[in-house]
Amino acid sequence: MEVKSIATELSKYLSKYRLKHSVFVMHTAKELASIYNVCKRKAELSGLLHDCGKYLKDCAMIEKAKELDLKITSLQYYEPDLLHGPVGAIIAKDKYPELDQDMYNSIYYHTTGRPGMSDLEKIIYVADLIEPTRRYPEVEELRGYVGIELNLLTLKVMDKVLLSLIRNGKYIDPTTIKARNKLYYEYYSKE
Ligand code: DGI
Ligand code: FE
Ligand code: FE
Image: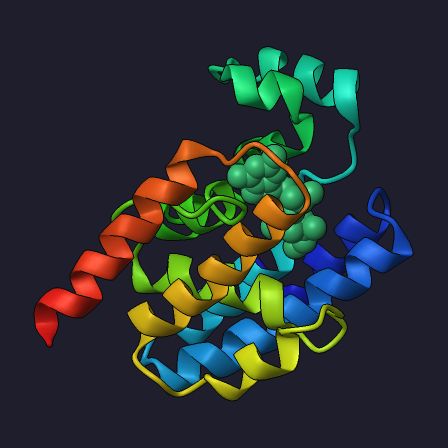
């Protein structure tokens, strides 16, 4: 598993924009890993691969998920883009069997998070949303929080995602709510 060869492989089927975003997530994840004492190599490889399942739309994504034997929730049927993490994790593991469970999970759950996220999962979740090409009103504020306790940083980023989903009238994936409650508990029970 090497960054250059993975990027070349991804460039064959991801859009230019998606590949660029993935490379920025890789760099951001590596920086976060160094701040939060997580393995930098795992962070950069997971960051680069995190959106490798994001090349299929709607019915094609559902078909792919079925082909991979994924259990599809009703929300995922309604919003097939929610499947690109799980689909991507399976594709990545198939192509790179040396990918460990933590890296697999960080790809699988990067869109919704999940209760009991590992530090690597938190880093990939955060890096995805604050990498330098992301543009949304609160992104500068979130970038400014890098360095605070990792649970609190992840909580702050997740709150912006939830607020934006609500503002846009979207259905919220219950996994994100459970993930938020767990982060909240982990952070505030330590105080
Ligand atoms: O793949 P990226 O665009 O880099 O980022 P991502 O993996 O966070 O995916 C973002 C997409 O996922 C975006 O279209 C919103 C959607 N999403 C994330 N959480 C939820 C959600 N959509 C709904 N309806 N409900 C959610 O809880
Ligand atoms: Fe994604
Ligand atoms: Fe992404």
